[in-house]
Amino acid sequence: MPAYRELLEQVRAEISEVDARRARELVDSGDPVILDVREQDEWDEGHIPGALHIPRGHLESRIERTAPDSARQVLVYCSAGNRSVFAAKTLEELGYEDVVSLAGGFTDWKRNGFPVDLHTGLEPPQRARYSRHLLIPEVGEQGQLKLLDSKILLIGAGGLGSPASLYLAAAGVGRIGIVDADVVDESNLQRQIVHSTERLGEAKVDSARRTIEALNPDVQVVSYKERLTSENVERILADGWDVIVDGADNFPTRYLVNDASVWHGVPVVHGSIYRFEGQVTVFKPGEGPCYRCLFPTPPPPELAPSCAEGGVLGVLPGVIGSLQASEALKLALGIGEPLIGRLMLFDALAAEFTEVKLRRDPECPVCGEHPTITDYIDYVEFCAGTRETA
Amino acid sequence: MTKVRIPPTLREQTGGQRELTAVGDTVQELLDDLMSRFPALEQQLPFANVYVEGEDVRTLDGFETEVRPGSTVILLPAMAGGS
Image 1 (cartoon, rainbow over the protein chains, first blue to last red):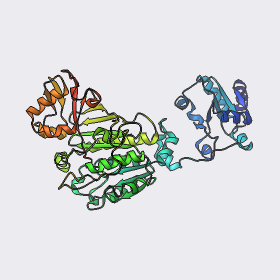
Image 2: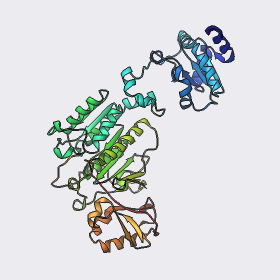
Image 3: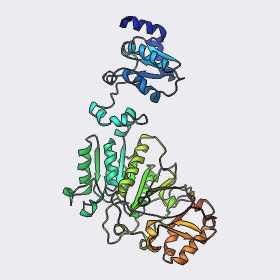
Image 4: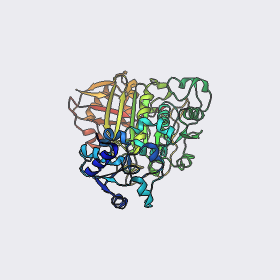
């Protein structure tokens, strides 16, 4: 049985190596997959810009997800250029056709004064907290950093806003804004799970903030203890949001959110609920229809469906609000097929999802070719006599 | 006879049923049939979108869009509830 040194030299003879100068050319060309096989702590202290990271021990199990194209060249490196020799051999055995190992490793790369990415990424506690995200190729460390850097505005901390805010906070969305003027009422607690019995009478934005901060200290909560109106919508939007999650409970707010979304180019994840049924869609300006393409104007107040008096199965906003959170995370990450141009209907009694297509209306008064609405409209309150809980 | 899905917000006008059967060869005829049986719908229907096979009839032939007995027809008015 060969000793380590003999084995290393034997394998080294079977693979291809490049020196740091040649590696630099390859890195600059952007052609190869650059693969760092060192341990996490070594990676955290700096790595070659653009490199992907798979610790040597996980190489076989993770490489196919990380670098699915086995015909593409792989430049593999470690600290001194020894572990990468074995890694290169393994990659060849796995069918990678063109693998080169960086002789002298990252140490030699640094000695040459070549660029080093010192971005350390996630802190160790974050690595533990978000480990289930890090395992998903579509999210991973880069995606998690994106979430931590994203800003999502929730309209309403009620039925839909409760699950949405909890899941967005748990997922590590870095900044969550909440607009709600209401206080926690006993009748809310059958479904509004971000609040609790001890918070009765407390402002919903404060109650939600306490729950979110207890769940995830990475999240910064921005509270707007006010109802969204034409007077404050510009100020709130000016705080710079990547996605709006609309869980309002009235038409005036829905239309304000829509018009602001179109004018600011911010996508809206729309959800609504009634009794056993709910709807979800994504209105993304420039890519799909807006709410006014669907419903150009609100119905007259006397015909507006009843709000608070209609009732809702407590878990329904859990389903719809969670779908909204899922769509918001996809938008923030830039992955998957968001519900743009598709309205998903959920019927809890039938346990059935149905989908209808939504199309842009070229005649839309806000996002159409010749807009006729260019300023915010304060529609009259629809649910007279009911509590305003936007 | 075509089945028409009634949204929850219009069921008080239709005796609480989730789905109704209506007669007609076009969307207009179906709606006329429903309105003759449930007159309270008349005020609401102008504010509802109609989908045939998942497509908004405004992108098809409007109320003249043809329907067949097996067609899937959905009425969908705006719904604002979120709290």
